[in-house]
Image (cartoon, rainbow, N blue to C red; front, side, top):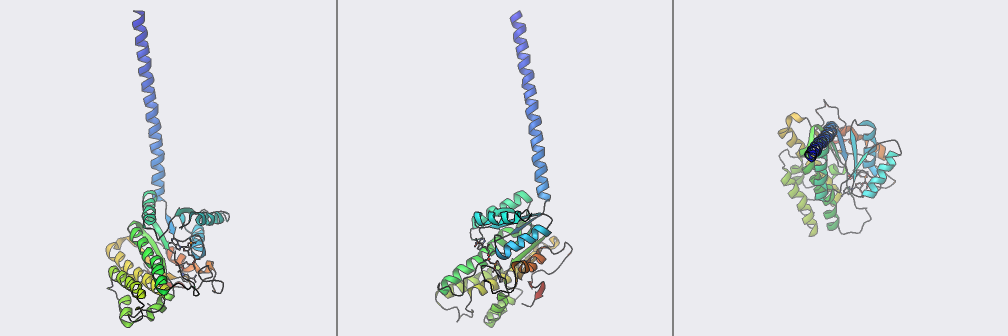
Length: 318
Ligand code: NDP
């Protein structure tokens, strides 16, 4: 009898502590879920700006300016983690708080991973500055066909990949800035009349433009680009392509997402002293960032510029 009472007591104790444990675990789970949900909701409401090639030159100056002026998180992205984190540390020593994400625009999986990260963490992107770019030095002895292939790969095709994967996650009211160059206009004017007509036309499609950019690269392999109406500048053609692409995508945004009021433009920072150009250029990176940052921070009620080429904060003739 005493044994039975004792086993009932043990059973009751085990059941009660089991309940207590369950209750404790349940409460803890509820608490963590609430904290997690709260942080997800907060991040989704936080605005976010992303700059490519942010570790030096104009890109770094753009990140610095956005850290000071943009009300949201600012991501310095760079293809090299070491160079990127060094740049973040230098901005931190100035009292600024950029965040870092590794992004190599020549690597499609890097682009898709970044797009997924910003979608999951912030629900999308509010400001995208496609600044990353390359240029061969004038003295470089690499064959023109190689220069054409390599330059268009980054400045046109990889930047287009960025736009393909990031445009769908640009939030309503978003701003997209493609750092092109005044060289894009000069190169356009040096193309054959037939090519100029296509680049300026309102009905050129993205596929047609991609075909033309590929045609330039292919023609340089056989040294036939001049006969086909192209000028002798790989950098120039890559930027003519980028400016034209900006116009095509802006028209598409207006057509497909008219209520989202996204503004997308190409711009020129001016001739700026960076590793790309050297010490002769008249503008500092801080002066060079002015137009890209102006476009990135166009006020919420702005309706223009959109689909334009902008230099010194002024729309330029195309
Ligand atoms: P820099 O050479 O100083 O900086 C270029 C930046 O782009 C670097 O951060 C570089 O990274 C990055 N980059 C290059 N390739 C990739 C890639 N595949 N993925 C990610 N990042 C990459 O040049 P600028 O600051 O002068 O140029 C910035 C932009 O401005 C370019 O698009 C350029 O064409 C344009 N521009 C510049 C002008 C000027 O006068 N400087 C004039 C007109 C336009 P990393 O350090 O790893 O190489």
